[in-house]
Length: 224
Image (cartoon, rainbow, N blue to C red; front, top):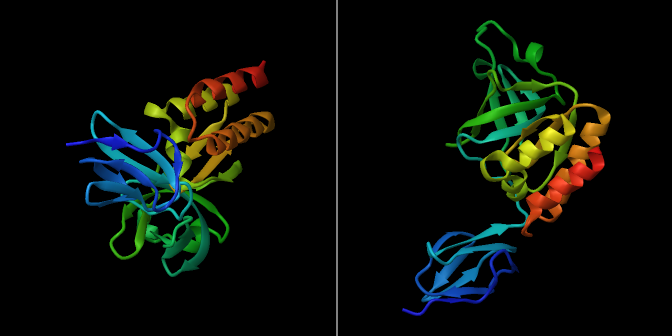
């Protein structure tokens, strides 16, 4: 069987563009038409010729919640014993008081207010999106928020957490990363500024190689 790659690895592609020909496994963002594989989104092509897989990571789009994801959301509404959160998705996040505290007599409006920022975990996506916010999750106090496309989050985290560890090391900030594209940063003003700048660079250059080295150099120069 003939295997042909028509684009470069990490190249930006558009819907309808021919990516490859042959028996590749399509993971995301593409579809097969006979032996040809075409992109279905505007995104970055990731091609592993040895393992024969292709995925196109969308450059834009709403976050799709998955069980186990950590997300950062903002309380939009309080209803009975539940808080409704905006989690940058087509679906709202539902946080029941039972998934916040062990105190069964607690009232949701005594725990949260509209506008609060909450770090939580997706516990269920069947129907509505249910969240869990018992420790180590919970309401975030102070700090600053930055929103980037959720598709860029893996690059912010890095392999085995390498990228986010570098940012924390040089900025001395506490950082929570939401898989929904929302990132919370808290530290000294200078550290927060530097962390936010680094995250913006990663978001803008996520499709390029050598990014970890460039971010490390950027942070080293700013700290010195």
